[in-house]
Amino acid sequence: MIRILRDFTKRIFGQLFRGRKQVKLGLYGPPNSGKTTLANRICKDWLGEELGSASKIPHETREVQVKEAVKIKSKGKELNFNVVDTPGIATKIDYEDFMKHKMKPQDAKKRAKEATRGVIEAIKWLDNVDAVLVVLDATENPYSQVNITIVGNLAARKIPVMVVANKIDLKKAKIKKVEAAFPQYDVVGISAENGKNMEEFYESLFRLVNKR
Amino acid sequence: MITLQFLPYGEIESLSSAQRITKLLELIQQDKVVLLQGRLKPDEEAKLIQETMELISDNFKGMELCTIYPEEKNLQFFKKMRRGMTKFLLGNREGITIIGPSSVVKDIKRDPNKIELFTVAPSLAKSGKTSAKKKRGK
Image 1 (cartoon, rainbow over the protein chains, first blue to last red):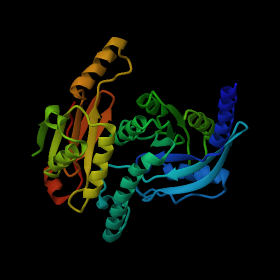
Image 2 (image 1 turned 60 degrees about the horizontal axis):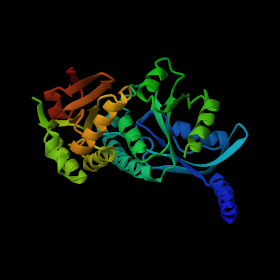
Image 3 (image 1 turned 180 degrees about the vertical axis):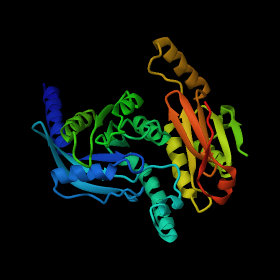
Image 4 (image 1 turned 45 degrees about the horizontal axis):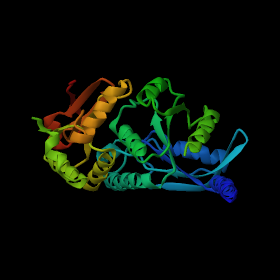
């Protein structure tokens, strides 16, 4: 009897504290897939303020940025998140690519150096997140090794993953191809820039967090 | 001229993860395209990317990496079990990993069933420019 009571109390209090705990939600993906735009969209929707600046030049986010205590509601439920926006993961960084965006050589080299540090930091953060959104540009080929490496590492660490096919407002977007590349994961198509399909995104996010 | 180096799984089998990564990075820094039998573990792939980032300079811009691996999702139970046992006993020898320096390999595009390797034209590779000559393989 005592044991039943003890287990019951433990379960109830465990659920209470679990509910209060802030979920560290990591946003991962290759450069320019729209991670910061999505983080900004989430923060703007629920806090009324943005997290960081987004740009068409790759590696705009070169440090991990965290927005704490983001309360998200969906279908009458509420969850607390720490939104962790990470630099894009790449296997190569060439400062000359930045010069194509009219950057001076010195600035381009500085950006490249910071970008390499950003990739290292993003990978280190894989051990600190509770759930991950893998943000992909739906107009690009989803079978890139960076995507496969990210998803493989998350699977090995048993971290719940949702694949976000971003930029579905663009004509070239192919969400079916993203779904075919990651059949074992929930894939949600959105446009972080104009807020398309965000309701379904939040519902899927709650399902993802409940998998933990 | 492109140098392709085949690396049988036996050559990395007894090495630690750190040693495997060092070996691969040494080869790609010699401008060689490595064809590795099997694949690295996910954490080794991540570590390889991290180490590559540490090495990036004006002369070394990084690498291209691609793994081809047989599909597992439609396998019958016994085939899956046999594959699992083989992996357990002999290591992850299935599939192939292609790794090349970005000064030689401009891009590796993968669709589920084919791989396209785009190389940088040799004259441009020396000057560090990235205009590419396309080379296709399966």
